[in-house]
Image (cartoon, rainbow, N blue to C red):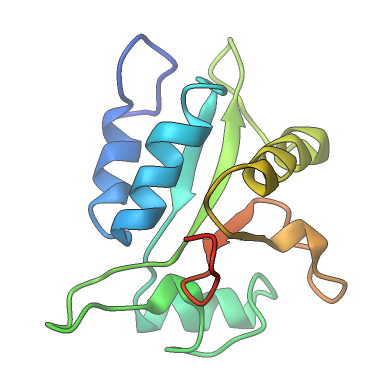
Length: 140
């Protein structure tokens, strides 16, 4: 099974996950996150009904299907997630979920032209790995 990699060039697993994301999510990740954080990788973009309900049952989401930004679809019913979850891949190939790493990306997002909602700012769930594009913002 393929693995995430920090090799020069795009990570094929991340590229695959981006196929189910909204174009603005893709643009933000490719132009703002990845150039500054080669070790940033995507664990999740779009979640189907079964995956979303499991995330709800496990406490990873407070929303049922289809209310999460991970569940959005385009006008033709194709996956078009407004959110992605990240992780950091260290030089040994070990996945890390560092608050500092996620906060740095959130701070950088606040300085960009993209309006990004960061899950680490939520008081109830505190999902630091979660970032979502806000389509209702004048920044986007």
